[in-house]
Figure 1 (tube, one colour):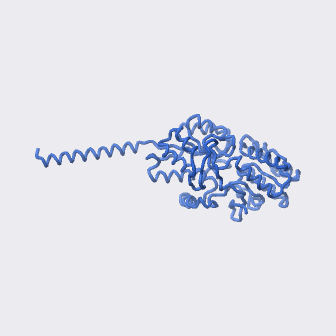
Figure 2 (cartoon, rainbow, N blue to C red):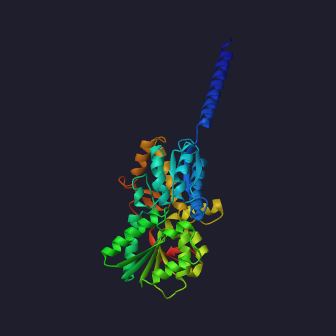
Figure 3 (tube, helix red, strand yellow):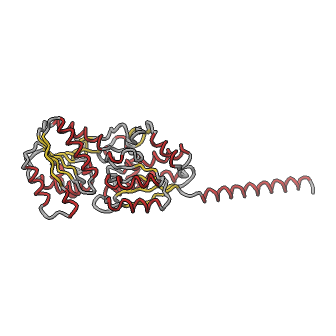
Length: 383
């Protein structure tokens, strides 16, 4: 074979091998399974406005990651887990999500749900980044939003600033009220230690579709205790009904609504006047957070609507999870848990995040405030 022809032959052969190798690598890359992450929240039912906001926050983070070749070259796939905010569904929802081979779960939102199913996720080596606020879920993964023990001091400080000497607490102590009971317990303990007289009225009947006039009756019962302040420890569907009942006496005692009432649906259900009758402990909607400007713009562009309160927290949770997967070199349970629990000064859309590895709690909460509803029906920081 002439020398020139031999060179051409070797070159062509090398080129074919290179093309074949590239094709093989491409096939391997294409076959790489996605990283499956569950978003568990009340995606339907009375709390769905918060749940869908949470879902959109995670979807936005996943879309952004997938536009840049995913995480470690693998696409992110979101698995929807709808628990309807009902602890009775907690086990079934978690087990269904686990069967879909998820590496992590963002959520759940409701503490009563998380108390039941966070141990199931952990037992099955699924890493949780939950949004439950009950201290009963301490150590069960991590969270970047407030916990009972972090919210109660804010509420105590506010109530003391009003000079209130008598406080009456209306509390949801149904099976789904783990968070609301925990908040009422902590606040009652702190106020009693301060010398404040605390009366407590149970709303356990909420579990059985209370009859017409139920909320008005309970509010009249609260008025009869002659309080300087009424504290409402419920979720928003019930809190909105209580706000309407409170508004029948506009000259009555001051009112503080607990964090679980901060929901876009509250103002819609209660109306503007009753919503402005009270102040709220909690986190304002993302457009009120200076740190979240980029997220708000991207969310509006993606979903043609403004974000609520918790979508920015699930967005940051997802981004934090993606970073931890990259730094851990994969989704291995132990390494990923360790990376997340040792998060230090991560700058996200909710501000800087450092996690206490002993509790899984965020150490700084710059977004936690006393809120009011403005004339535009938005939750804003109260002066």
